[in-house]
Structures are given as C-alpha cells and as structure tokens.
Amino acid sequence: MPRSLETLAFENAYVALPEDYYRRVAPEPLRNARLVAFNAEASALLDLDPAEAARPDFVAYFNGEKRLPNSDPIATLYAGHQFGVYVPQLGDGRALLLGEVRNARGEKWEVQLKGSGRTPYSRAGDGRAVLRSTIREYLGSEAMHALGIPTTRALCVIGSDEPVYRETIERGALLVRLAPTHIRFGSLEVFFYRRRPEDVARLANYVIERFFPDFRKLDEPERFAAFLQEVTARTARLVAQWQAVGFAHGVLNTDNMSILGLTLDYGPFGFLDDYDPHFICNHSDGTGRYAFDQQPGIVLWNLRCLAQTLAPLAPRERLAAALGAFRDLFFDEYERLMFAKLGLSDPRAEDAELLADWLELLARNRADYTIAFRRLAEVVPEDPAHPANGRLQDAFTDREAVAAWLDRYGARLAQDKLPPAERRRRMQGVNPKYILRNYLAQMAIERAQDGDFTEIERLLDALRRPYDEQPAQARYAEPPPAWGRRLEISCSS
Ligand code: AMP
Ligand code: MG
Image (cartoon, rainbow, N blue to C red; front, side):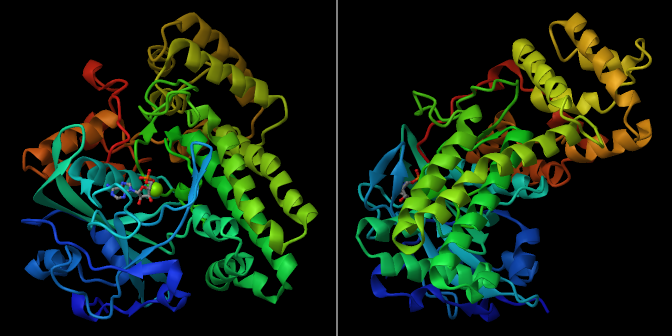
C-alpha cells in the first residue's frame, strides 16, 4: 500500500544510542525551495506514493518548513582520516538523518537530507550544498545502482534561490538520500581515538545487530573479527566493481567509507572517458592519492584504520587475517569481472596476459574505456574484414596493434565453449553502453542552472538501463566533445 508523506513508517533507532553520538538539529529551510528532480523508483523503497511529489507539502517537508510526522532530525558524529591525516572531529556538517522508514518488505531505509543547514559539526562550513553537486550525486548514485554497484540512493533534489558562496556564487540545493545506514568507518574511529572502546563495541554491535545478524551468536572478540572480515569482503568487492566499470570516487577518506560497502558521498567523482589508469578526478588531489589505479590500495589502507579501531576488541592476529584476505578477495573479483567483460566463460591463468595487454593497448591509445569494451562485444575475429572489427579499431589510434591483439583474442575465443551470439549477449550485459560521463552531467547541470530541469530526467532515463542498446538514447553513449574532456571537477560542493 503506497503511503502518504504523513503516514511514512518512521523509526529512529540511532537516537536510542548514547547522547553524544549525535545532536538533534532542526533543518534551516532554503529560500524559495522547489522540486528539481524526483525519483519514483527510490520512493518505492519507502512505500511512498510517487503522486505525493506533486503536493506543495513535499517540498515543505524535505526543506524543513514542516516536520515529517515521527521523524526526528539528527546530525551524527564521526571522525576520519582525510588524505592520510586523522581529523578528530567531522560529523554531519550539512546532513541530517530524519530517521529510518520501514517498508512493507520489512526493509529499513535511512532518510537523510544533505545541504539542510549548519549543525554542531559544521566547523567553518555553511551547511549547504550547491545545485551542481547535488545533481551530480543524484545522477551518480542512481547510475551506479543501475549498473548493479552497491550505493546510497537518491530520492529527490530540491533547488532554491539561496545564494551559496563557493568559487563563485551558486544556488543552494538539497539532496534527499537513502541508505540502509550511512554509518562510516569514521563513525567508529571517533570513539577509538577518544579511548572509548566500549563505544566502538556498541556501534559495531548496532551494525551487526541490523545488518550481519549471523554474527550475533559469536562471542565478542570473535564477533568483531568476523565483522571486520565481512566489511573487508564487501569493500573488496565494491572496489573491484569500481575498477571494472571505470569509476573513480575522488575522495576516499575513511569518513567517506561505508560500513556496508556502499558507494558513499559523491563529490568530485568521475567515470573514465579515455582509459588513463592514473586518472585523478579530484582537482584538489595534487599528489594523486586517490587516482583511479590507487583505489584498491587506498581502500585497504582505510580498512587498516578500521582494524586499528577494533584492535582493543579482538585478537590482533584475527584482525590481521581479515585484512590479509583483502588482496585475494579483490583480485579474484576483479579478474572475474574483467574476464566476463572479455567474454571468457572459463578463464585460465594465462588470460591475465591477454587482459593486461588489452588494457595496455587502451592506455597507450587513450581509447575510450566504455566504448572499446562495448565494441569488443561486437567483433568477429575469425573474419578480419568484418565491419565490427573496423569499428573497434576506430576507437584506437594504432589500428594495427588492435588487429594483432584481435588475432590472439580470436584464437582464445575459439577455445571457449560459448557460441558467438551467447558471448555477445553476455558481454553486452556486463559492458555498459551508458555511463554518467562528466560532460553529460555538466550539460544537465547547466540547463538546471538556467531553470530547465528536464535534462536530468532524460539523462537518468538512459542511465537506468545502461546495458541495453536503447537506439533512441544513443546520443548519451557518445564520447565527450572536445570541451567536455578532462573537465576539472572542483572539490567544492
Ligand atoms: P566531504 O569532503 O564532503 O566528505 O566532507 C568532509 C566533512 O566536511 C564532513 O564532515 C562534511 O559534513 C563536512 N562538510 C562538507 N561541506 C560542508 C559544508 N558546506 N558545510 C558544513 N560542513 C561541510
Ligand atoms: Mg563525506
């Protein structure tokens, strides 16, 4: 049964945690707020009737002019390692958790406002988010979900006339996002550094109770080791998916690392256009700490911070063993995904070389990552004159090198048991045609800044079915125009 805004089934478990885990904060409404984008697919997660978005109260509630019945807005406390340095207090500086909504399937979804004004954790910040970054997170998170990658979700974007001061004067906006929980590694770290291991244990138990109930029966030291093992496994799988699809997060600080292995806190993120393994999407990341190819190592570094936080609670060797599993978990998953992208149904050890040479070819030619893989699904290696082979070659500057690699690839495929049509079908199912390229997001943003919000929905419509051909949407599968290559995405948001 779809619910109205007034009858959403709010529960607020976080407020039952000790008082200094959060602060109650009333949102500060944005001036002249209006609905910019609404995602009916995400509203279904709350059992919210999508027709409710048309009511003026929809904006009034999420803009904090009215309180949603039974919601209890709080800003949560956390800390984190930012660019390798521990920062003792961060916390929701511009986000508010309204509570959890339980749906008819028994799932609970945290509802969070991002950009709703200052909180006790705002430090020097204004508590606001700008329209640009809010649209990027809205599109980015829904695109990731459609690609099958774990992520927070986005319910809507609310825009306003509120001036917000960044490099230029922009307009304030607000994202309503959803996740089973927004708890981060930093939510636990803060208590370790305050020498309160009992609070690390309490919050870990909170997560275990709700999300990893199988561990409840384990005794405490063992339970926390199992917890780290589970977070490690989820995080390893997540980063393998990022690497396979060509997603760079941009700010992999421990306060942006989800305890559930979700993609969290979309800032200066970017999907690869041309394949550059050292791609740095965050304009402020001068040393490339969070470059694309650094992500698996950085994520492991972040997991070490989490392990340290759990060290007073579990035997060191058990925590070390959990971390030690990361390498194999990551590489096994990454290879599985990449061999599937190559269309190999029974991969062997020697295929690693075929893959490495393909990626090297992409990097050397600065070929478009998404387009090259998509065109690879079409090739007919046994017929060198086939036009599909030519189309693949056209994605590279060195056509001869592609032809040579295709010979090897063809020989390898001849030994694979999949019939060509089935291989093509499977490859199209794992090599997306549509990704959220920076220039596409930029076009939707510029239109929205001029008051036309329709491009957001049109673009999202294509991104919702990234693996389908969708001929009518083919313009969204184009590589970036000259102006749209290597757009500098500032960290300000
Ligand atoms: P981020 O780099 O966006 O993950 O944010 C790091 C920390 O800064 C988090 O604690 C945020 O809540 C906080 N923060 C970011 N932007 C703002 C802002 N405009 N106002 C207040 N706090 C902010
Ligand atoms: Mg953050």
